[in-house]
Image (tube, rainbow, N blue to C red):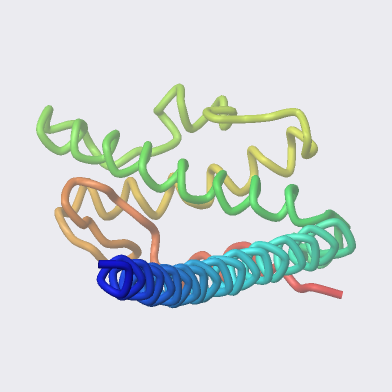
Amino acid sequence: MRSFNLKNIIGVGALGLALMAGVSDVKAQSWGRNNAQAIKQQQKMEKQRLKLEQERLRLERQRLNTVQARYRVNRNGSWYNTDQRGADLLRRAVQEGYRQGLQAGRTDRNRRVGLNWGGSSVYRSGSYGYQSYVDRSQYQYYFRQGFERGYQDGYNSRNQYGTNNNGVANILGSILGSILNVQRY
């Protein structure tokens, strides 16, 4: 009877050791999987951090280029200096002039009024969309240049100086360039 109890105790002990070894093995495998997931997560976060850093550097370079960029505009043989914002506002003056002129030309054609862009109060003012960052006379000059071309296109129902995409009128880039003549220096 004693040997039976001893056999049982040895068997239970062996079974216990086997179970403990198995649990230990399962814990090791689980730790290995969790560790691998943690490493992958760290790598993913590092890639995201690098992407954000690259984007930050790109934006900083762009900002510096914009701040440092200087432009000059030739009007009637004289050069005027400006920066990126000023050049953008003068481009917008030509664009807005074209759009307003296009509308005024269409209106005059439909009313059967003679071709006369100078008769438009918007043309005479030349200040539609003006912002005081650039000289008012500069803005007015470029607005009127765009207006005249837009008026002609609108009055004559054509697209010689611009395009109309989905209801949005834009002066052609080549025409804009010839009117504005902006140069970076």
